[in-house]
Image 1 (cartoon, rainbow, N blue to C red):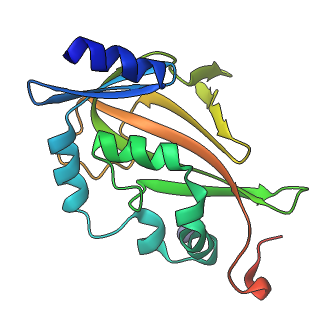
Image 2: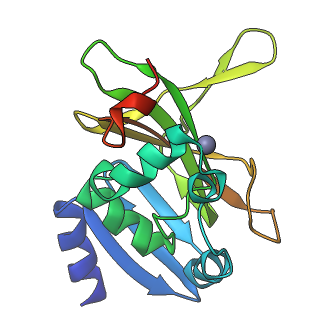
Length: 178
Ligand SMILES: [Zn+2]
């Protein structure tokens, strides 16, 4: 029966299974094996995400758009992994695009591992860049192993969820970065 529901889940592009305190999630081309409980605890112990604690105008604009920034399937995935989507480890603003939207990047962490495409691409001598996968017109995502600015106490075995998002400027226009 479990196998049946699992197979059906794959057909829908998403499935969630619980086994030995680890949650296995199939999402698009990836398989995640997540310690959801430990991840949920880490997020619960964090009072707010980095853009909220920063409070600069670029972060304020991101926070103001947050509920619309993450596609629903990403909100569901993050929740399945134990991640609170309102508590990013960090975000960065790049620039205002020709279409008027602002390009941001950001990342989260969860405890566990994954199978499937790693978004890390070597660049230059010691650098890296990310090859993210589009989820919608304005949002792309990727996964790799790192612990940049993680608020997990134990920084071992963390997956870093990288995203890019194009979002409008919806706070005071006089504050817009141009
Ligand atoms: Zn900021």
